Image (cartoon, rainbow, N blue to C red; front, side):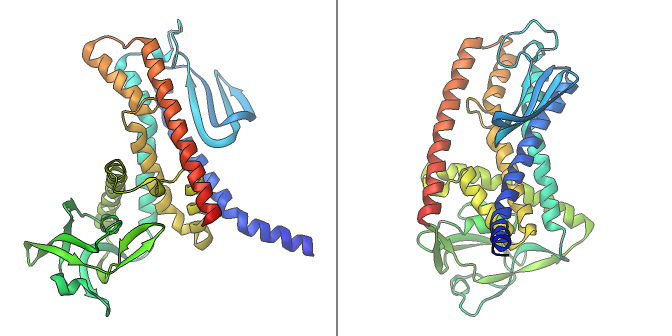
Length: 353
């Protein structure tokens, strides 16, 4: 009985993190499936389609393609003929026209973004109301109403950044050291600028957050506004990913705000323990993040490959293969080094935190 209880206790603690690993596998599979489908449509020979890296746990060849599941579920690949080297095969990636290669390379990110739209729609499906950015009323301890914010105000801008959804608003309220922000609201049909609106702050994991001391109106759900909110929220997730990158480069956030696979797994696992429904918005944010990040013009990423293809499309000649290979290798080494650094940071945070 003691052994059974120990096993059940172990499983109850571990299953949320197994869900997180499964989530990573799904997101990777979707990304690589985008490359795979586009390659097949463009007539490119796909030699291997795999999830994970390292030793193979399972492999099976169907037609011309070997399908594999590898030991380490932190990646995946769609290995096309002539992708990284010259090939005489007429169906090789390198022998296809630039626009065809462009579609194949961009398809992985597109599939991630499309999955993001679907997951956002799922996360917004429960309930009868959809969130707005219009102030309904203030809490008893509210401070912001003493600095000009009023019930009925629709918040449309915070510190120079447009606000479209509640998610935009949540991000705008993060990492504000002095507890005050500039807000532009729509009041009685007119724009009103409110400067130095103050809020109480609270610190979490080294980041200061403004305490949202007001409630927002909910909008009754219809088919039309459900679709509108789904698209707006998806765009908001993408904007936050972009702004996060800008804020990281500008120094607004430090390395402590960056999470790798270990940190994300811990976050997803904690959310799964509370409710599986919590996973939908997290998955949506991660897949949108993956799609946008992969399109950045960074060597070794899809965006880096697209940059070389665009150069070829403009100047009608390819970049020398050796040069492109060296650039991608350097990019891969740098990205791998950053991932190791972030992973150690995540592990240290879990140990000390």
